Length: 153
Image 1: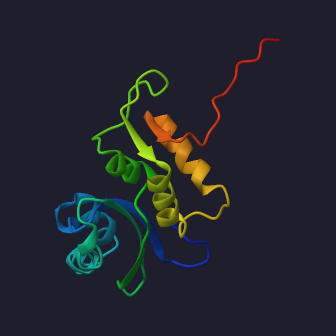
Image 2 (image 1 turned 30 degrees about the vertical axis):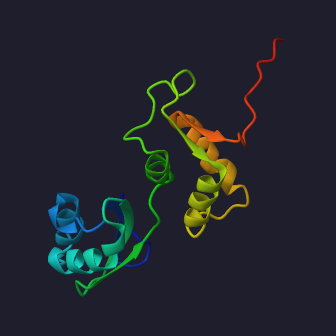
Image 3 (image 1 turned 60 degrees about the vertical axis):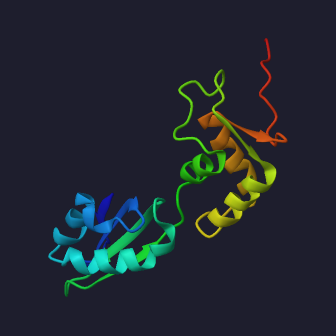
């Protein structure tokens, strides 16, 4: 997602690529080089700051200024990526209601929720993560969410 801020010529781009793989991503080059910024400087900084998160998709918000300097803010990995790692599966279910692909415990869910807390501003974060797990075909043990009941009118 690329957009200009109103009233100034700074440019912000929100992208995500795997930790320590900033130099191999064409998105990285396009996000920084497009505005005249040298992408290898960004890649070097990004790889240094994501050295401990290799393999995770790390969203980053890049701001390129008029003088071709840049700043970036690292976000937490998406909840779906964290759930897949916790469940030990490669991808979610095609039909999450019928086919379950994995299971996470309530402690793993709380760990993911506390990791995502800086990026989310809500009180019901455990329920949000449990909903994401349900939509991916991952069971939470013990269940947090109640199954929806069909009401006949």
